[in-house]
Image 1 (cartoon, rainbow, N blue to C red):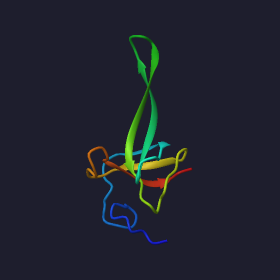
Image 2 (cartoon, rainbow, N blue to C red; image 1 turned 90 degrees about the horizontal axis):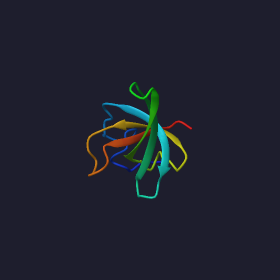
Image 3 (spheres, rainbow, N blue to C red; image 1 turned 120 degrees about the vertical axis):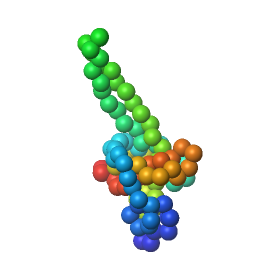
Length: 94
């Protein structure tokens, strides 16, 4: 399969840099974009309880990777690709 996507980190010139995250794809409705959701917990000393947080990050989804809803993926930070996208999917974990 030949990849023609100029923003593919595997086959073309875009370079991942900075932080790398792992999350679950919750939406793949947009063209070449997925929404990756990550859950985290942080301890609050004042209340002696954990605070659960959830963040949703839009990421570029190259055609050769093709992540779908429900997949666990690795995403990497890259240069700004559009107004909202600054991450790219590098591989599907599961």
